[in-house]
Amino acid sequence: MHISTQTNRKQKIANNMISILIVDDQSLVSQGLKAILSLESDLEIVGTAENGEEAVVEVENLKPDIVLMDLRMPVMNGSNATRIICERFPHTKVLVLSTYDDDCDVSEAIRAGAKGYLLKDMPADELVNAIRAIYNGYSQLASGILERLVSQTTVKLKPKESVNSALKLLTPRELEVARLVAVGATNQEIAKELFISESTVKTHINSIFNRLNFKNRAQLAIYANSEG
Amino acid sequence: MEEKNHNLIEFYNNLGQSIVALHIQLQAAQKLWKINPTQAHSSIVQACNLSGNIMQEIRQLFRNIDEE
Image (cartoon, rainbow over all chains, first blue to last red; front, side, top):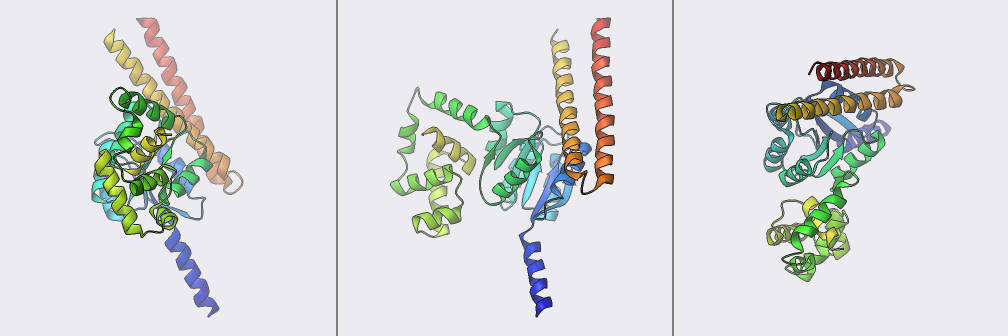
C-alpha cells in the first residue's frame, strides 16, 4: 500500500512536470539554459533544436508543453517556427527568449502566436517563474515591452476611434471575460469567477478574437490593458 | 558607407549574442557552484573562452577601423 502510494505520488510528480524544448542556434545558450532549468524539480528539458525547422520537427516528436524559442536563427527563424507550431500543435506554448526586444521582433512574435516574449539576460529565477506562468495560461512580457506596445496601440487607434469604442463592440459578458484575460486569468479561473463553464469561456474568447481581429490572449491583454 | 553601417550592425548583433551566452553561462555557474561544482567549473571555463573570443572580435574591429 505504502509502495503503491509512493509510486502514485512519483507518477503524479512525473505527470506534473513541465516538458520544455530549447531552441537556439548558439549551443552555449542552450547548454547554459539546460543547466539552469534542470535544477528545478518541476521542469524537464526534453530536447534542444538549433533552428526553426528542427524545432517544428522536435515539437512533433516530443510534444513539449513549452518551447523556449530564439528568434534570429539560420534556416528558419523563430517567428516562422512559432507560427507553424501554434497552428499545428496548439497544446504547445511558445515562449520567445530573445537577445533583442525591438518592436518589430516583438510584434511579429506575438502575432505568430507566442504566449510570451522575454530576454535571455533576465535573472534565471524570473525565467523559471515565467515558464510556470506560461504553462498555467498566463502571458509574459519582458519589462518595458508592454508599456511600449500599449503606447503604440493607443497612438495608432486614437485618431480614428478611441480604444474604448472598439471594446464597445463586445457584449457585456465578453467585456467581463476580456478584462479577466487582461489580468492574466486562465480559462479555468475565468469560468470560476463568472460561474460559467470553461467551454463557454472559450466560446466568448473566440468571439472576442473575431470581433477585434486578434489572434491570441497576449494581444487581447495588451489591448484591454491599454483601455485602462 | 552603407556597407560599413551594415557591417557594424552585424558586429553589434553578434556581440550581443555572445554577451548573452556569456551571461547565461555565468548564471549557470552561480546556480551550480554549491550543488555541482564540476559543472559550475565547466560553465566558468566556457564563459572565460567566450569573453576571450569577444575581446578578440572587438580588437579585430578596431584594427579594421584603423586600416580604413
